[in-house]
Length: 530
Image 1 (tube, one colour):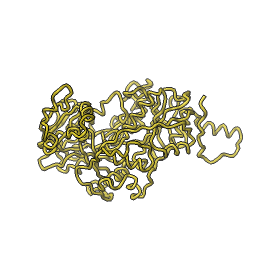
Image 2: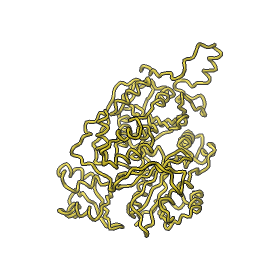
Image 3: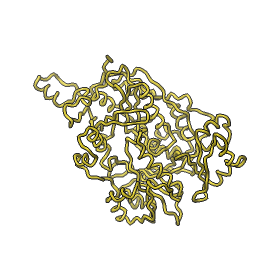
Image 4: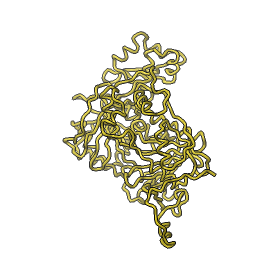
């Protein structure tokens, strides 16, 4: 049997008490392993500040996992323990302590290696047969997305002369604000007693885990080849002590944003003062379906010596198609796998640059003093007087940050991105709140009740939860849309006509803010906006 994890007692030591009083204490506290062995379906074990909310199955493209969902009752952050195999009887558990990264895991950003580490860790855990990935809402090494975005704004404005760790120091932050109390509590509630083999490149994380009483049997690195967009970030990690052998990567040319970035101090929006504008910077977004967008100048430069048609020939063509789109830009559809093979033979060829040509979106990060949440807006292009921006209100789900078998939500986001970049002007307004605005806890509970046949549909589960069909704050989002597109005339991207009919609150908010939808773009249609 594995040796027990010595979980520290963070409470004040109790003096000896009578057996009758001890019984009262025992009735108050949940025992080790109580999440896996509940006495009643309605039990929600609590340890320290970590409250169990729900469990459900998560099917990923690397295998089946069970998600145990918790929430910290003080800072309200969710913790997902994504478990695979026998987590109780295994001699060791392959473990990843993963901090959330909305930009790479939801928005397709490629300026870090977070999504690669997330998916790589799940693959290792599945291959080893047993393990847990702890997913913590500790964006930006624990400072939240506002702090992380202000870091990116400063780093980009300095052309990478200021590192991410320097930026934190200048902003009065420690280099790492993460806390692992919840991980120790989750291990107690699950009854996990095995030592960990931790999948990480960060020695500081090992020290933090051992300080919380968790036994670490070893580590395994998760390292990936740097790109032009994250090479500076990875180099700064290596300088701070992360074990990264490829971080210097002298052969990788650093990519800079398409326009200058100027830092600013936080300020309330004059027209919507509930929102404090905290940061703005450029996010390189991975192209969708291999569709790379080039200006006429970029196109002429890439194919100056060798016409593009020559790259469309042969048994392994590098380019599948190309055509002119709105704004005299060119859409080049590439075959990435063939270009990777071609790069090994001809690394200096200009066509290789198509592998690292992103969609540059500008990220705007606001702090909402009403909800105490971040509001995130991605804009593309600069609207002219005659432009009618393509707009998408995108609801996010934490589960969709994982490499799921069902990729419907990811596909919807990708199709929205395609419509915006094809037209050339538009924005994505992100709704963080899971479960149609009821929160991730409600969504997870809905999944648990329907999976365990306590209810037979999400509608029935929501009635048991006491939650309406749609609780999303459309009023706030419409105010941000009017702020970014003051004319009020837009093209709106929706899932389908039926979803528009069902979302009465959505239509009411559009009318209340006098937003004129010149065109509806439904994602179940095949045509892209031109």
